[in-house]
Image (cartoon, rainbow, N blue to C red):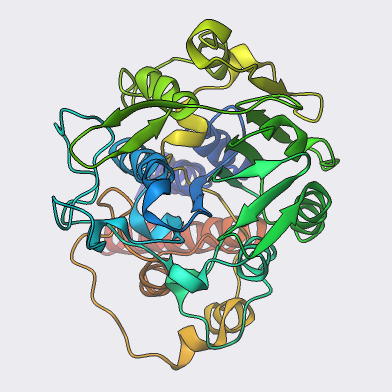
Length: 398
């Protein structure tokens, strides 16, 4: 065989090895940059909503309607029930005075039943207490608490917290039996911050003297808005003469009027919402506190809090069993759950999502990128040299 042919085989083998190695060598920064494109400007990767009605009794029908109206809105905009915690202090749908049993409406025309067939109430009746609310926010719940009653957030969670009921200067009543103060609320938010339980919070409250409830908040990345200032009452919007009570409050009504025009792809911002606040409509002075918030309001989409995002976070490899045990030992001991479509609209529970990630880890793992790239290069180089040697030996025999 001619020396030029042998040299040609060697050069071809080296070129093949280099080409294959480069083609499978992935730069970690490029991968992270690719996935970063899917992240929202706020940096959050998941959304949660905590919706709280603190009032009992039939004459507080409107407070239950306020909460259920907000529940319907966040579900419509993509937040699944697994990421919504709803607390209703009373069940007016089943009240004997309700001449439309098993229904709740927020308008006298009764065009939309807010109770419907797909309402999941997580805390009901006497479970709605100040202690349970604070434990929910801070994650200090009892060991036996089911997942449906846990706020499973992290440092990349955007949380909407909506509260409605009867209040006064720096307090909100829970069921006419106890009160949560502005100091209690500020302390709970500080614990959440220290435990890295949120990325950003939108705190919204509809009650008398509502704006005084966020005066004691000092934790970063919290935006707050309320329906009325100090010494002002919040008013209902209209009543239903057939049931004899008011069916919705003004502040909630006009917020919903804006949100009903929003869809999942909307570019409407919180500034657009706040600009609609009108004393003549609300008959009270709404407030906005944004000094703790680190983004301009005209860049904060409504869907950053009222909607849902599904972003991908690139993390280092971990032992799956250990990571699950650290999060919640119950996940490791439980039986496997089967998920038909893990990509479908984030409707699976946190437990299902964790198990799905565990299954996927057996088929794909990024691992240590530097080590992985080195071994791939070596493997392809050896393979290419071996192929070149085989070709050379075959040619020599011929």
